[in-house]
Amino acid sequence: MEPRYDLHIHSALSDGTQCLEELVPLVARAGLAGFALTDHDTTAGWAQAAALAGEYGLDFVPGAEFSCRYVYGTDSGSASKTIHLLAYGFDPVTSELARQVERIRASRQGRAQAMVERLAADFPITWDQVTAQAGAGNQAIGRPHIADALVALGAVPDRSAAFERLLYTGSKYYVPQLALDPVDAVRLVRAAGGVPVIAHPMSRMRGPALSLEYLEQLVAAGLGGIEVFHRENGATDRERLLDFVRGYPHLLVTGSSDYHGAGKPNELGENTTSTSTVAALREQCI
Image (cartoon, rainbow, N blue to C red; front, side, top):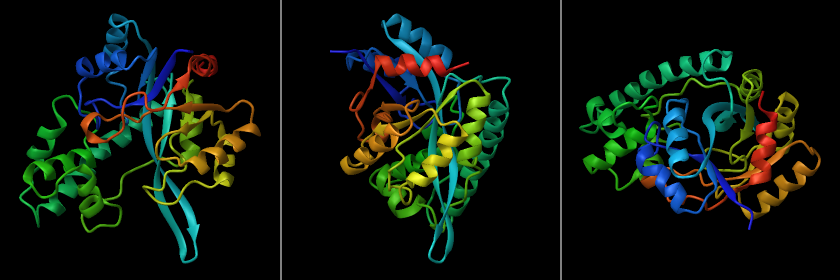
């Protein structure tokens, strides 16, 4: 059987629940050949993840996940949803992408603090409680950590309930996040020497699935791949995506877990990517 990779994993440096010292051994135990660390809006874990991967005989693929705002039309006008773009092998220091990500990261904390202030009117929640949930060194404090603080308070039973009842887009506690346009983000990743892959495009957890017409726009901007095999893409949608990819031979098809530790039910290696696809991805990196 060909060795497999999990190309979408989060650590406690963003919204995962495990530090890299805990996480990397689990990747090895799952029988994977390698993995990508794709924390939100940060590359802070790359060096340590690469070192630990070497200790456990794993191949490491540097990556990140960026939240983008997708605007679409409805019968009553326009609406927006958050979609996620995975990026692999990009310049994390000197590129325009790095500068834009720093701007977004700086705004992320202010947004989270504003949501905590709104929640504090109805719940005994403080910013210190949220940062305690995020842990030291976290560079991407956001709604998952607010959710964890609410769980710790007993306001909700788990993260999912916190999002469903209190933190969903449009709730009275919600504050919009600064986010890149998806087409612009794809171009920025390419300009930074990386490979952009759209994450779980048929997910309906944050609004409607992306249309194939919009995927065509992303391909025209430089999209390198589609995360087809993900638990939020249903069987029928996977077939639609695979049929779409047949029209663009350069597009890579990836699969991954979107693992967050205790933050989500997703299991390491529940969907995976082939070694040959990882090699093709690396060939696209500048």
